[in-house]
Length: 364
Image (cartoon, rainbow, N blue to C red; front, side, top):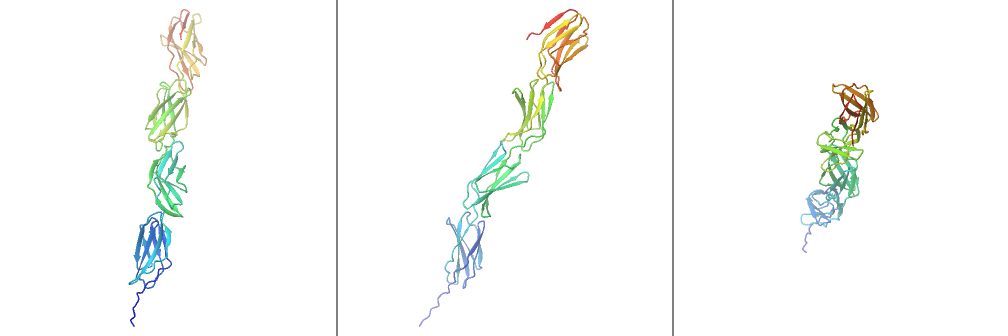
């Protein structure tokens, strides 16, 4: 009788387990008798297959595809034969990075809205904004859109979105850089030039601003402005006798909604217009009448003689009497209007002569 020796077949590996670090599987199993080497195979739901071979009872299978479920099994190899394949162990890889990210800045509210494409296997998403000021803002959401309301003005932020699956980090998107709205200009100061009726407006540097515009808005709706990349500018000539609200806006290449607080200024009163003037020769008194001047609190009527002597009359009304004018003189009469800060340009001058009764009317 002839006897044949059958090949010794290794037992199928038992207790196969795997742990995933992103897209690398760490596979373990129990020692199998008569085994020379083992091959662990990972077969993905997308058809991708990867293996690792070892004489130990563990190995790493790298470069798996993200967002896939892999079935992992192990074969034991003896000198001549291999075992039956072990039972499969299913495990998911880390979710892929989100699809294309779109980030928009709402200039009115300084909200930053980020949206992206959903990723298979992702349970939630971490949205991270890393600012040029060194501060990082992170938020978690299960949606594919998030509004960030706590970002600082005038900063450059790099926005990234990272997928999460059951507490395990997935992959991060390519970062998108955005600029938040410029900060509101602070410490605005206004200096009025009473003679020119222009305003020199100054302010502190505002983070993120590329251009500033100072506006002067009159009570009558008249608006004038000046623009600059510096921190001061002078407005064009303002209307006389007007209350103006002055404020400064800061803008970058996208947004121009940042606005300072408002400062009110009163421009110099308008130059008075004389209606009539009369001279009482016997009393050497000139009576002058003029129209009300916008912005005026009080007036000074001045009669100036040829010898340079000046005879003023102060009043809060639109008329006054200039007394004790010496005889035989030709006088030039002008009116000035004043408020708490400024004096108007003088009214058009006209002459009056003492020594005879004379009445002069300025026709409209």
